[in-house]
Length: 265
Ligand SMILES: [Zn+2]
Image (cartoon, protein in one colour):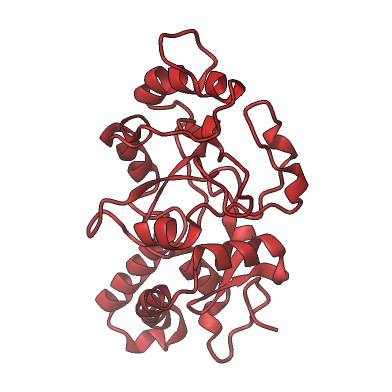
């Protein structure tokens, strides 16, 4: 996971249809907030408001076509999901919770994720450090919650989740990193394999550019390797958080000095 630079301005459909539906604006629509206050606890949501092409386009651009959690490139092989960071219709940890219905069309709650991260792993999980502080309706104060999952827009995930080679690790054993890795399945076998493939490729570039007798490398190959390395640490590159950890630790190669987070002790 890396930090995502998402536009502050919400897409038009959320500003118009979304706001009317969630409340806070007089309209002809039935509002979620009014429905809840009248006793409704089960809500239905309109994917044409939170997940139309216009919303997805803004998110995929901001996220460089990558899943907000696993950093796999999504759009070449799948449509991907609009993911609700706080689950909209149900909370796995609390059967009686109606879900964060009031955030279903809230821009700050929307991310772009691959189907595996969203549908197979995260689903409706939203663990908190202190479950008694969970917001249960639009009347409650979300700022009282301390989510154990890392929000990739509001904070820098690389402070919590590092890597040892292709394996995601919790930096200094912190609980939020550990929970995020477990809940999102960030060490599932398919991801470990994909990241290993990437790791080996970038390690080879690194060895050519930095770790070999440079005089023995033809100049054009050296230049290509250096260019490849520069590209591999840019936000648009797949699994860049892993690559950055590897670069900081000089790929744990023999003789490399390493004191960066992510190195096993
Ligand atoms: Zn994913």
